[in-house]
Amino acid sequence: MFWKSAKRFMIFWSFVLLAAYLVYIYPLHRLTAWLGYPTLLNVPAIVGLWFAVTAILWLSFRSSSRALEVVLYNWMGIGFVFFTPCLLYEVLRLGVPLNDRWAALLILVIGIGLVVFAFANAQRLYCKQLRFSDPRFTRKTRLVQISDVHIGSRSAGFLERVVKTINDKDPDFVLITGDFLDAKRVEPKDIASLKNLKAPIYFSIGNHERYAGLKRVIPMLENAGCILLRTQAVSFGEVQLIGIDDAEDRYQVENELAKIDLNPECFKVLIYHRPLGWEAAVDSGINLMLCGHTHNGQIFPFNWLVRQQFQKVRGLHTRDNCHLYVSPGTGTWGPAMRLGSRNEITCIDLHC
Image 1 (spheres, helix red, strand yellow):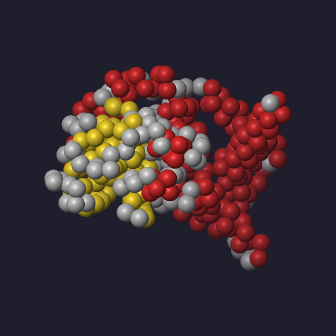
Image 2: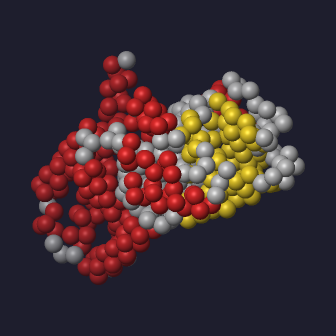
Image 3: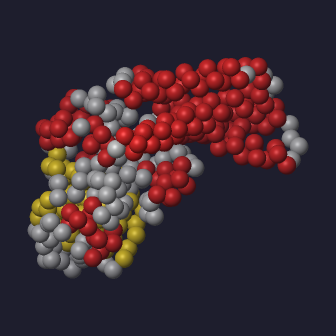
């Protein structure tokens, strides 16, 4: 047990140290050198900054300071945007003689433009429309899915805009597929605008609800009007809504669906946070599975890394009369930035 814990500790902090350099320091280090100011970040300065960033990250893991999170997350997002062109130029200059100063100025112009766009894009809400027909329906039913809102990283004001947009769609049900909040410091007042939704809210637990502590989070969500579906199903006419808690176990959907009484006469909608277990959903006769979690990478080219973990990172997929829809997320985790992805509210019409 000791060696297993020590191994996890070493892997985690090795990753943190590597990320601290590549995202927070590397772009600054290379750009200052290419601009002709290598002494600004000499080796002692790099080591000192690296140590400081790692220490601040360590403090952030134990702190609930919003100000500290804003600085760290936004620096992380900006660093990630600049990391890609810096690395590409680093490789290019190995084989092609180029002017480092002009290249650095170009990278700065491009990077600043991308950063401004990413921050602006993360403030917009896009509505995606989906339609599914089934002979069982005698009337149209409208569902609205939101996922990965991440209140904590995002503000109560952002949630108010989400709620207003949802109400404008006049849904019959609102489905939240996890990661609605992501910080222990989130208070009931931060999610109070959920009470303004005009439709019933059904909620499946995401990984960030678990991280924030379910004993505290669940009563807060219930007081805000959410009905949590935890290996549970509810039926409304021709529609059955099923919810399962998120888990690291890849067999979570298969194991939990086996415990639920599924109604073969209903159009069955499964809400589960991460896009895993679709095969089990197909085998169980689920008609529509709604997921999130991936953010579609949120900031390019992180979506390439996400695809290494999940086969389905966004959009609609169909197999054997079962549809899977993976939302790119309604909010953002960490930096309020979107590059190569967007904030989405998904409107789903079910009709005959």
